Image (cartoon, rainbow, N blue to C red):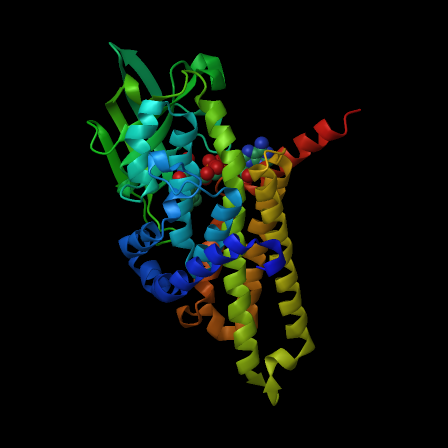
Length: 385
Ligand SMILES: Cc1cc2nc3c(=O)[nH]c(=O)nc-3n(C[C@H](O)[C@H](O)[C@H](O)COP(=O)(O)OP(=O)(O)OC[C@H]3O[C@@H](n4cnc5c(N)ncnc54)[C@H](O)[C@@H]3O)c2cc1C
């Protein structure tokens, strides 16, 4: 990241995380991908650095400082080393923990946030169901209240971190006829009766993160674990997704940066026709385009994070950053394979993992099509007839 964009404090955060990632996370990335398992080594290392407490008040176990710019810097650096580690972190921090921190009452924050903010526990965030993804308001998991306890029935799918989570934020409907106004948000704790978690295998990329199916069979949730008000859950989910997009965009910048670095290095060592391929103009143009795309996505991401931190409207800019950065990292990682030629297609070079990891980013936390819908809606608001 160009120095001018960052404050002294941000530069320090960046170099601390970069140093940790280069030393511990990046060297493990290939093995974690092959094992297809959540890495507790990565998790505990990130927790030790205090990365799960950014933006959370010290009274709730957090660092007491930082905002979206800080989380974006961290997400980029972690993703540069291993996208799997970054998705585990962002599902935990900018989805799960932030929902409890933002919409929980004092008692809930005191009870639930400290283990999450210190990384002792992992959070997950469960909105998607087999029948509802982009159209999240169509969810069918039900919450029925009996004598001060809510009973959950239904299932969620593609839930990052669920298999390792202490707390899962779950969105369920109390009255499907009310559409999104019937949806409430709950915290389901690990080990709850009737809670079943099944790991989903066979992902294309981010294989070092756990993605799970979560099934509820009359799962009791005490009233004290209802977040905020009944019927407001959908609004909470959308608000969280609006800002979490910034962090996914930062993750994409990290993935793109990793692909770019790998391609530039390889181009200077591989020789064809008597000179390094970096001396061929076609390769130079490819590298220049890749660097330009990474830079543009980074600027857009930090701009949206700055707007968010300053309390300014950021919705359209966050969607633009997510759209731009996710499409960028798919494209740039594909070009990185091209620069590598045949070896790029094999695990040995490392860019095939980056390419596989990149692919999901145009799908989760709002597909590219959904981002375009958000941007178009904002445009109509800005320029009414
Ligand atoms: C690895 C992974 C991790 C995930 N982690 C989580 C998680 O932690 N928590 C969670 O809740 N979810 C998670 N998800 C789910 C993810 O957010 C959804 O997959 C995503 O929102 C898309 O929903 P869908 O899969 O149902 O696709 P659909 O909504 O069925 O979309 C299918 C296609 O139709 C397009 N489409 C849909 N509606 C429109 C429209 N109105 N106009 C134009 N095109 C449209 C989409 O863009 C897409 O191309 C994860 C997914 C993956 C793959």
